[in-house]
Image (cartoon, rainbow, N blue to C red; front, top):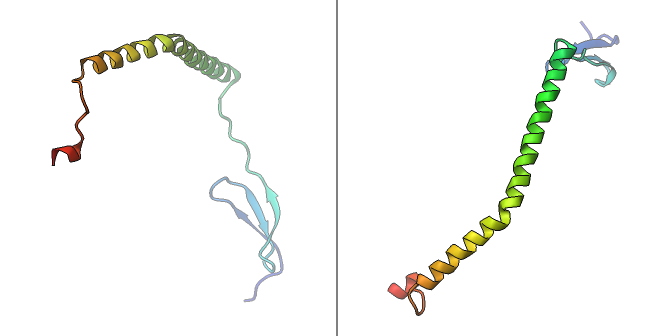
Length: 101
């Protein structure tokens, strides 16, 4: 049996699209996309999912606004703690690892 000159169809195992292949040139000469899958069963479910997504976005935005608002206070506290540690540190040069050899 020889190779037929007639084009044949192959289904993509990943997306389900139908590809028409020319056997001589081995090139795709036609493409039929797979039917789109429905993400939601009905409009009410889709609307509920969108409301939940909007609520999550709003919550993340509020958290970032609060963090930005408290950022200055947090930095001041960290600076005060570092200053206190610096004052309590012993005077003189700090010891380094190779000083102990």
